[in-house]
Image (cartoon, rainbow, N blue to C red; front, top):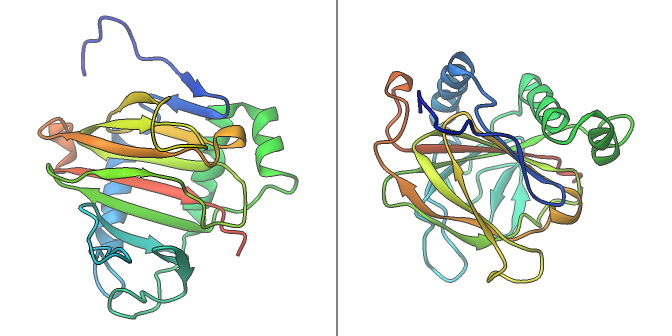
Amino acid sequence: MDAELFPRERTEVAPGAVHVPDWLDADGQRDMLRACREWARPPAGLRTVRTPGGGTMTARQVCLGRHWYPYGYARTAVDGDGAPVKPFPGWLGELGRRAVRDALGEHAALDALGEPAAAYDIALINFYDADARMGMHRDSDEKSDAPVVSLSLGDTCVFRFGNPETRTRPYTDVELRSGDLFVFGGPSRLAHHGVPKVQPGTAPPELGLTGRLNITLRVGGL
């Protein structure tokens, strides 16, 4: 929003889980959107994810570095067109490490990423239209415990951040807007989280995006 009654501030939602509003500026958001549109093109482009039970996820997805499917990683789009997964660009890894430093602080980032710093090498990009949701789940298919970096573009969503033990309460609902950063690691690395609601028509008009994009960066350790 252009005029905030109370400016949004960095918030530690849970130990190791930090929300940084407006982390990507307008130019950064436009650059990321252009990249996402290129990544979404076939081969190994945006696809509908099918669950083992025969259902489908309402958010569509494209992957970089490794292809995620329920519940593992592959080098090809095994549940899509079978093409090799698109490479993970170095600049995106640098962005991920900078995000961790900005969210957690320099010393905590060193502890979280190790020395030398762990290299981000996997991205999952989810596209939400007005009706898409994401159920409570854990990001547990990686062998590394480095923090997950989550960036939002487009429509605002309700991001539900829970706990490592259960999909139910206690959890905290956080409003994620375009440009916001959310990082979770340490005690919260395996916390359940999901998106129960997208607020259509809330994207910045100048961005030129209808819907929501979520870019999550991970260290696979595979």
